[in-house]
Length: 103
Image 1 (cartoon, rainbow, N blue to C red):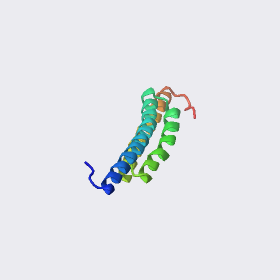
Image 2 (cartoon, one colour):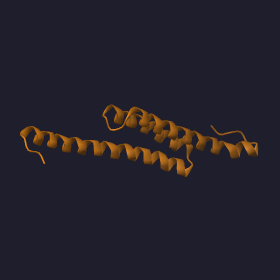
Image 3 (cartoon, rainbow, N blue to C red):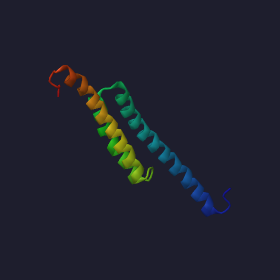
Image 4 (cartoon, rainbow, N blue to C red):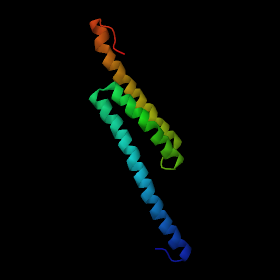
């Protein structure tokens, strides 16, 4: 419970900051979910586009203090490797059949 005027102001500021950070986290999670859905569907082009849109959002979260830098880098790295594996899985059946890969 805030007792002094300073602590009351800090409590107000904390609530406002919490609300803004909550919106930022939610926005970033939405971008990450879009990447996850594209990976699950197996669509390499959509997954790549979603990852390309999600990367700046994640790094913006770092500059705003929502995530730590290493956390965002780790998430981007893991997602990009999964997107890459989706692309490799999409090319594997074509290579096995002897057809030229569609680029």
